[in-house]
Length: 331
Image (cartoon, rainbow, N blue to C red; front, top):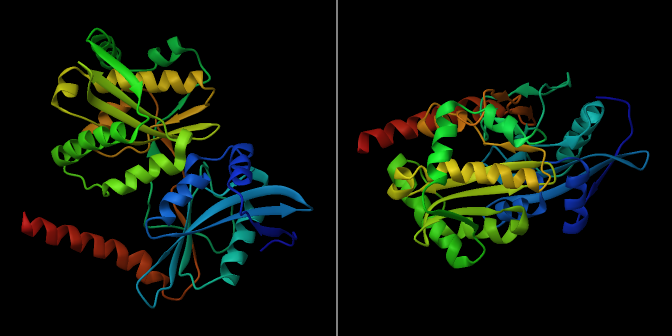
């Protein structure tokens, strides 16, 4: 622990909090609206600011989820905390102290927008990640010609091909338009074999994040064929969800759609476009076509707060493997 005296305060104002997120260059998953979404679906939320000599040096939106007893709770900070590199150690110590003093938690887990972790005592590399550390972050400060040149030849070809089709792109605003996107998402999930939340979850994301969650829809003959759903802050655009139907696949609508989203984020003055993770799958191969580089964040780091922490770090991965194995037997 450091000898620096800090003051940790709870923020109760959405307007004040979102201004802090913007001021600190925070990620959209640190916005008030994202916390509201998680709170509506089984988490509790606290938003903390850290001051040193009455000067704001950091902030974090903490999500808390009860674990099976007697573990306590899982405290999670997605893409946070937010602070300068010089303040990381002080901010981390302040957050740990606060969590220790307020409630029974098994651990604190962070997945910050950092390239390295300061040598702070007590933190360890986590075995369980929520977000994928390997991603692509596109620098939107460069010219469009430079962005295009950084793509693969095939990606540029498919963008041009889809632009020649009778495809129009608009933003989904109404509840009906969001539901049309969810229909596409369900079709995509069934085709690709991944699970989805219930519809209310996605409706809450749109309503609670508001303008911080634009949805771009590609239409053909006025019917949706593909969509791309983002969360955005002052500096970061982060892909949340996307999908398309068979016609969208045939017309390569996802290429035109992603390029449109990238161009729009650039026009809006956003600095970075994050494709939200790379896995060993077809979707990731598609994403990789939009840049010649990859970015690796530091991943998750845990601060254990309970002697039962090994049940989380070792037992949870084993339980996940067993669940997948049992499901495979039912196929």
